[in-house]
Image (cartoon, rainbow, N blue to C red; front, side, top):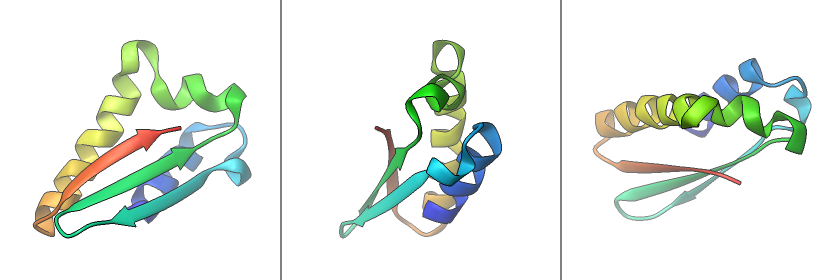
Length: 75
């Protein structure tokens, strides 16, 4: 799932080399931390958080397929 988030984020930002994704796995939950360059933060979040919500929806669907729960944090 981390690779999925990284691919989506790199497609959106101007500095794809500064995208950093970390996965923290628990028993039933996976926390995915996404870090981007400060000037690209607005592109990842989007107007009123629409892009961030879409990323979370896609990751949640992928996690459900694996019987897990995923949380995406944009840092």
